[in-house]
Structure formats: structure tokens, C-alpha cells
Image (cartoon, rainbow, N blue to C red; front, top):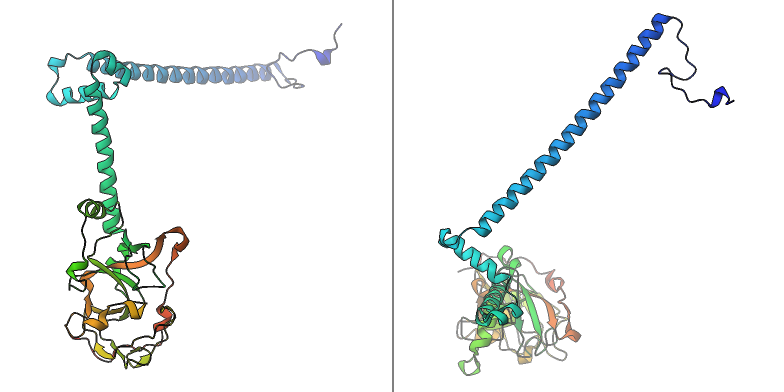
Length: 328
């Protein structure tokens, strides 16, 4: 015979609990019966809600599939011109090479591939143009006027975005448009294909319409040299660590005051740079802010020259502000 302790408790009351009277027993039974009924009702409601949700999802899916079937099976003659084009492109997009061969539609397949490839190329050109116009732009260095900072055949990038929010400062290396004819016409070359790719931002600009120099004087500055010593800016001599080895700061004597909205520029390889010093006499020595394309900040190619340009603003840190307002 089994021990009472191992017999399952089938009473609705907690184990070990004994009602004190018949009335208490009846009340407790009614209470637990209500709890059981409420629990059963809640479980039934939850099950019904779940079933209703599933039925709704099935109905929506069926409706969508039915609508898709109707649209797919819709008679071509009943479609609007826009719907016809959409259906035709959808059908062409699913056309494979082998299917095109079997159905004699190779020309159509080739046209689809060309159209999609052209779209990708167009998007790439637009993105490259936007990057070149508003963010970064590449340039090719054809001469040694900025050695050793920049070498012949270097590819550099300028910060186009920065030029919209700030102005060049002393020590910056800038690229500017040759709007004043510094470059002789005999040295200017042009390649329509390269010019087009450069315009789009695909290739670095290799045209002869741009120059790269270092800013020495900003609006209002007095820049001078006696031809034997260092350059002076606003009466203070500067020591230029970026000069080409063995080059004096300037073998040409000059003294100029930089007009408003203009810049006085010089190459780092002073003996090989036809910069602002050599255009004082013809009135084209100063570079307009409108011609400045941006500051060179990195040499990107070749890889053995790769690196950020060193900030040389400390060379000019002791220069006082101009004593007079620059003239136009």
C-alpha cells in the first residue's frame, strides 16, 4: 500500500490546509473555481486574438498576391503607357543571356546591359563631379618650382570645402587659376579627353591653366627683400625651413604692399620659380582670392611621396598685423 505522503494532492486547497468548517470549505471551493474559470477565459481570449491576427495576416498576404496576380496577368492592351514601359523593363531585367540566345533577342539583351552600365557610369561621374566641386580636387605637379615640398609628377589634393569657409593664410600652399597669363601660351597644352576627365573629377587636373605656390603675403602685408638677405613681412624677417637646399630667400630686390582680396605668392624653389616677384613690373604680381582653388593638404601619389603637408604657419607667428587697411 502506498504511503499517504506520496499520494498526489487533488484538493483545490494548498497542501496541508484543512478548512475549519463546511462554510469555509464551500467558500474556498467557490473562490478557487472562480480563479480557474477566469484563467480559462483569459487563455481562450488570448488564443482567439492570436488566431484572428494570423487570419488577418493570411488575408493581407492573399490580397497582395491576388493584386500582384491581377497586375501580372493584366492584359497588355489594358495598361497605360507608363504601365507598359514598367512591365517591359521588368521583363527585360529578368532576361538572361541564354534565354536571349534561344529567343533571338541578343540585341535587346545587349541594349539592356548597355543601358544599365551607362546608368552606373553616369551616377559615378555625377558623384565624382560633386566631390571635385565641393570636397576634394586632384592636381598634377608638372614643374620643380615647389621643390622640395612638392616634386615633379606628384599628384596632390586640395581642400575645396575649406576654401568656402576660410581664406588662405601665410604659409599655405595654394593652387590658383592662371587668369593673369603667368604661363606663356607656348607652354600651355591641352588634351580634350584628359580635360573632360579632369573636369568630371575622374583624373587629377593636368591642364596648364593652374599654378601652385606658397602664400607669403596676405591683404595689407608689406613684403620686401633687399636681394641679399631674408624676406621681411611687415618689417619682420622670416626664416623659411621649406626652401630648396642652397637657395637664398630671394636674389631679387622688391618691396610691395598686398592689396585687399589679393595674395603675394612664391615658390619654395626660389631660383626655379617665376612667382609674384617677377610680375611686379607688369602689374600681375598679386593673386585674386577668386582664382584660389584651395589649399594643398596631401601628396597622394607616388606612394613614396605620400603624406600630409606640414603646417608652416609657425614661420609667420611673429609677424604683426598690417599697420594700414589694404587698398583695393
